[in-house]
Image 1: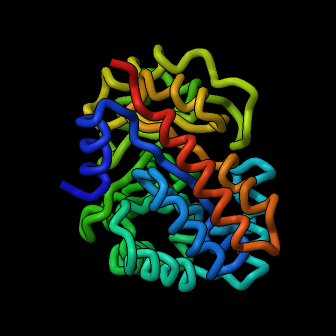
Image 2: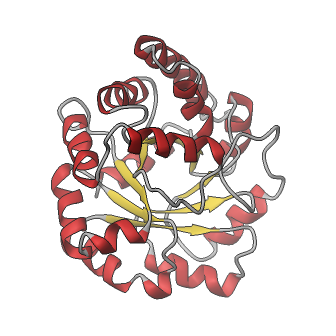
Image 3: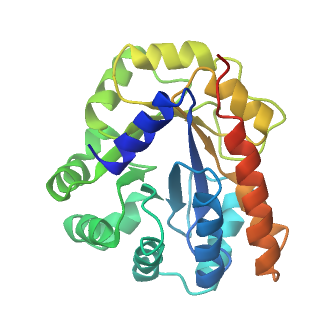
Length: 268
């Protein structure tokens, strides 16, 4: 069993959903980013999803686009992202999922990139713009080096395609509950119970739900049906709102993460 599988199994045994938290690696700078990661993993986060900063993101809303800009402006590179994970591994064994784009993987050499990610302490890769039909080189490298793969199902994904996606994934299925890009929303999508049921008909892997989830009440609503709940923009906003005050960033992240984690517990 991998660390990622263990995290979902532990949450299931505790009658709750796993709390999957997203931050952009290096936002707003290396040291603050590392401290932000520590604040999350020490306050209820089961899985840390690290966005690898990229100049041309496709799935990210404005909040996460600006986070990537801040990270790149501070000097984050592929090598520095790997170093961030290595530093994280000095104080935490929480599973780390890279949220990345294929250009970043391809230009560094697929096998070399995956091998370096594994050596740094990464547990899985979610390559946002890589469909399973074209992911053979990445899935083969992940299999070779012992990384899990994560693939996305959207509200518009037909059942026949879900089977292909489920076959390519080894870590979990990421259900993006809304069409469009990441960002805070006033309410969660209304089709989550039905969508999770449809996905589970094709796989025994955990199903994590994200996009637009930002409050404890929303986390609780999703946790009643999903194996994992992904929160991103609401956490990135804690950084945005306190730029120049690292202590306030970490204290705010700790408080928000603890509150959101409480929402993952199911009744009964």
